[in-house]
Length: 617
Image 1 (tube, rainbow, N blue to C red):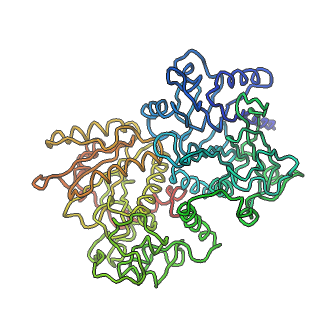
Image 2 (tube, one colour; image 1 turned 30 degrees about the vertical axis):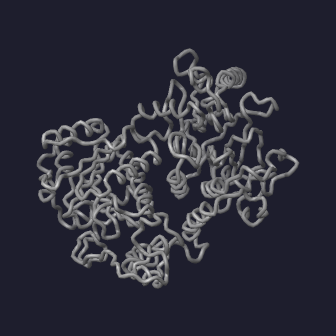
Image 3 (tube, rainbow, N blue to C red; image 1 turned 120 degrees about the horizontal axis):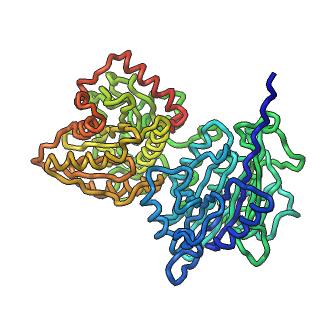
């Protein structure tokens, strides 16, 4: 009998805190450690990577030497903390040159990778999740609420996360605060806790929520300028323990440790016994009751509106776990009186709210107690105020309205609160789907902000599904006075043809005698970029009764406003992609009709592959 081959050695990873642009000093230390105790497979940098100041050339510290080839990065290095005076200019160039969405980082020079926004990727077998950037301002270097929501979705996926990297850097009007997860020292041995960490300021409940949900084996953070390795703690409803490691700044005068080595075996190949092993110094989770144990006066001061927004955001999660009464309203039930998900719905079915909605009360007001649209909202923000304005009715003859008894529900793939996803009737390709508003609305651009956020989650999920099959998505929508119910078409194209999509749409437009305007000039590389692009599209399309737009694989959006006397082909988007895919005979959907049995089989096949990504699951 052949001997069992030895298990591969676990990867060896170096961790570093805030570099503050001191890359020469950092990499000199890395080379020394690598020569004496290496080799190491990668370096992960948390905290602020770039210098808070700029030199005479406007470059962020030493990084310019590496970008221009005068110095080299010794081992593959991944960094978060994309903030600093010169960082936006530098990273905007890197983003512009990047192709597609890069979960494993955007390479800005050999061996140096920028981790932007939030995502999950595999590094030498280790599952790595990160939240990068600052919150509170727009533009480069920011993470968005979509990035946070994406991590919440990742927490629902199977598998154990090995490493969680956080750099939440919150910007206030007159000062900066660096945030660790609120409650991280709860239950820890106080003799091991540095005084800087006992300071009640600079902690964030959002990160605490995320780490409690994601349950990583290691949580790595910087920004406090101090080294702290907390005792392992037991996670709620998980077999493994979590180790929190905070790192000091590179070259700090206090001699705080800024580089740390770990060699974890990937959880995916660990035995059950090893995963269940608990060190003798393990404590309870510091986040299990942090809200109850933290004195009110020690909580960071936050604007009332921020607290309110977070309350409702977390309430959805708690309701899914059966821990809260109330929670957010189901839009489908509130607007129509019925919900196809029935008792399986994650949202609240409230008949009183439905009655108020029918009297023209704003859904956001009913759902959150406030409406962010303010005076622009056409609906009532009072439970007692009467009005004669009527809400758009749900049309029983509309084949996209779920309340229509004749709707072809067997084509539905997933149902959210504001959108549902369905197989296209007469699909161009097998995975051709539609994103359709639950509300009877003529354009996705007219949907409320919460629905737009949900659409972003669906697009992120579809992107991951298509990527798994070697494809990328093209989105397009035709809006006209004839449009009764919006449908955003989603057609996957092979990676090999992705670069040609932009060219063929411009060519087709030229042949019809018009030119597209470009809504956003730079590629989309994060959910935050995608959100900004859609916001720009919405603002540019306001008051336009007829238009066509297409979202290209790299994230650019092409827009054409259709004149009242212009004869625009209703199947334009489909015809262009049919040409790209060499399927001219399938340009007309009526030539692609399937039997109901074939449609059911195609939907079932899609559901099986999409289930792991479905945000409504």
